[in-house]
Image 1 (cartoon, protein in one colour):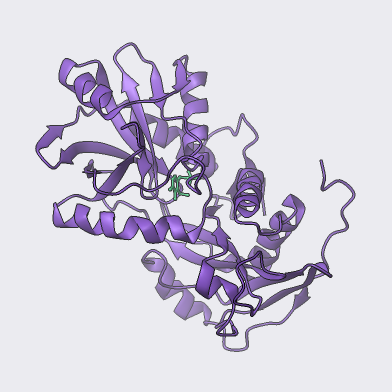
Image 2: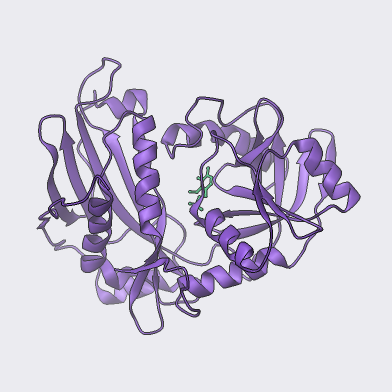
Length: 360
Ligand code: PMP
């Protein structure tokens, strides 16, 4: 491990004198809406070619001053992550497989020619923020604190080359259950006019540009009365949704998910597939063409289709709509049963037999 022997960072800590009062916080935590309210503090670590990672800080949450020539504003050199902190019944706070998010951030950074934050520093940043803002982790059912680590090119320079100055930040936002009143099936628009990624592109990296590119097709999905959009690759294989992976369940119990260099490797998907494998399901990563999907549903070979990701955990797919068809999707029990098993582990209601939880 390249991190071995790395000295821990010494964070400078500045308290937010305008922090929310406990009463204000309690009011927000009663029913937080996704990504609109943030905790009182943020973490920030600088990186430069000469100095490496330096000036680690915990400071009041607030605007970041950027030079108008900062490279990120022009060329989009940016990567991010999404991970949750969960409060258990005994009050303790845990996060889920943070090493996986740390490594994915490194892979994303490598693709965007950004420096790789050591896994240990990533974990330290989570611990630092929770140490000061732990009271922001809600205790309500299916609530959590969504953690958003991100990194971008800060150098003021308009040449097109990797920036010499980069900032890593961590902010956090309390979130409620994604689906109020249970996970109801979502409808999906099949995007044939646009793709999200190409071979050799940035599809496997969690970088802002991928999400910018998904906004127009997502708007078309809304126009079509659908909740989400699904993308195909150039060979008409199913890739993923705008912000979730996709999983197919076959009649014989086999579970299949697209495997490709141009989709984001979801940690929720990996975990659900592990739980399914533990139950004896055969799990396959391979190409699934749109024709296989449609024919499989028509013949009854495919018995369930669901999407998964950190925010929603699991979303059963109820309908697939294309330019000239609407296919109702079969609804089964496996998606919701795996969802229950995973959230039971995350919230400390079930044995963490894979050692996925990390106490913060
Ligand atoms: N695909 C995309 C494009 C995503 O943005 C996400 C959310 N991070 C996922 C898949 C699911 O990944 P995870 O389960 O790690 O949240």
